[in-house]
Length: 120
Image (tube, rainbow, N blue to C red; front, top):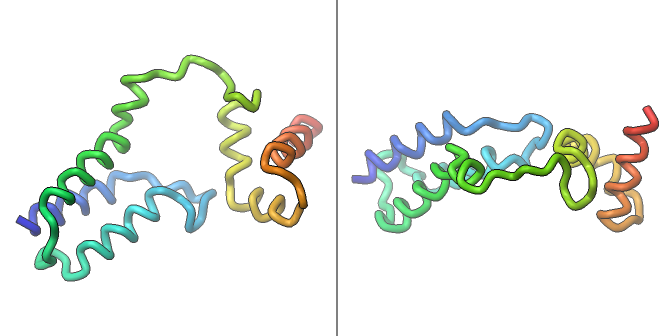
């Protein structure tokens, strides 16, 4: 049974998109590492079937946008007032490295970043 679970997880990993702007912090990257740890011996790994099935079902729902479709978000901006595109740029590794050395709260960092983007 572990062999079929292994193949399911491998298919899920191949379908999961990686966000190159979040090097080492992307959910897809973390899932791949977790699967590699859980299936150290590939198809011959000893696994907890029930836990494995729950994990797979939860990840599959995320990957297929099940909850995004079930609970659609209708607003153009988040509580910060920023658009999705601005927030996506903000959480990019390049921006995070640039802002990590500033002694500001997270909200002030977002505010500073957004003002800088609008000024361009």
